[in-house]
Length: 152
Image 1 (cartoon, rainbow, N blue to C red):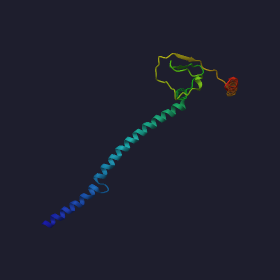
Image 2: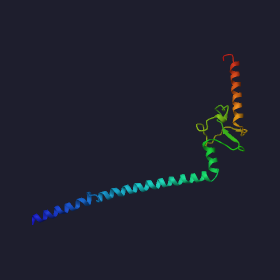
Image 3: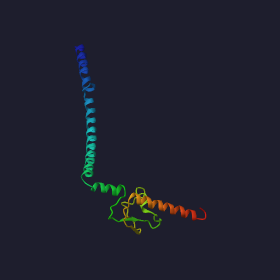
Image 4: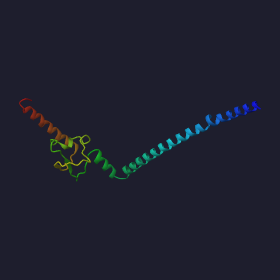
């Protein structure tokens, strides 16, 4: 009788082993369920991101409003009929040429200041040749001014 009991316990242990640690065992199923939850969450996040990108692509393809918005906020561009307003701190010197000022590093978007405003009318649109000619003329004037300086 004792031998039968030992054999039955041994058979029970052999049956339990694949149930817990085998290929389709409960521990493996639990691990796969956790991976499934993580992958489902990751897929949902990526799907949301893809929907945002798809919406942005449709905006850019459908009209000029999205392009204008990007040009306005990311590149600091404006239309011909608009007026550029720059807020200048009372303690700092005004930049000599606001068109050459770096827009990204000195952005004041979203900040409110009690400083006086300086309104700059929109410059006249010029062709590349006209701009190059004006730049050459300004460069020559600077060189002549440097030559006239007593220490230069």
